[in-house]
Length: 142
Image (tube, rainbow, N blue to C red):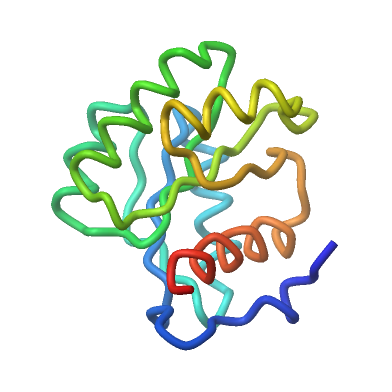
């Protein structure tokens, strides 16, 4: 697995990367914000507790990457991904999954039909979360 240091921003990737956090648990979202704000090339530009608020914040703040918590309702997450992509097609979406990573079929369903660009387990070290954010942003710039 690539490390955060090996996935720095490439040509065409904005610095700092503008990130929106979407998670219904405020305490965890704020903690993740504090940790990501320590990364030199990542700026958390907003937080949203649900999909409807995320739509408003995406339209206002124009994030490069949306870190979206995927709970148990994958169909609802798919709809949120579609709506965010329709508002800002250039934004990349990383699913923050509960527990283990999605299976290949689950990931294909959400990425193929909804437009998610990556995933990271919610219990990952912050370096891994930052690395995934950088990786999906680098793919967008390629």
